[in-house]
Length: 81
Image (cartoon, rainbow, N blue to C red; front, side, top):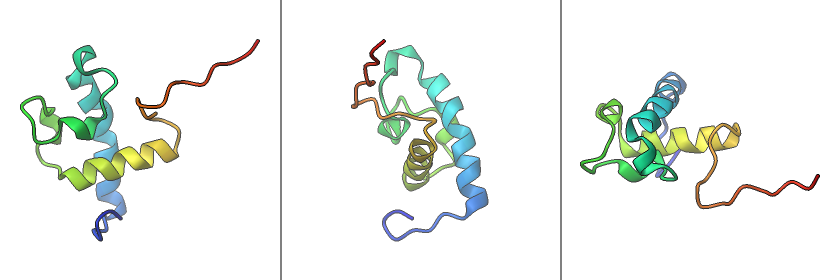
């Protein structure tokens, strides 16, 4: 739930499935950007046209919690060998 809006589970899963396609459409030019940052701009992926900004952000948060998507603002941890 974001901003008091509950997204039904089946809809959230549909949106989650559209995020990788949106990232692919954004391409390398927009690497390091969150999918939601392109929402409402000329660079918005077409796959997001039938979605709301709240849905895309909820999908990003879900993917963060699952460890599938990482926040581009946080540098990857350095491993010591």
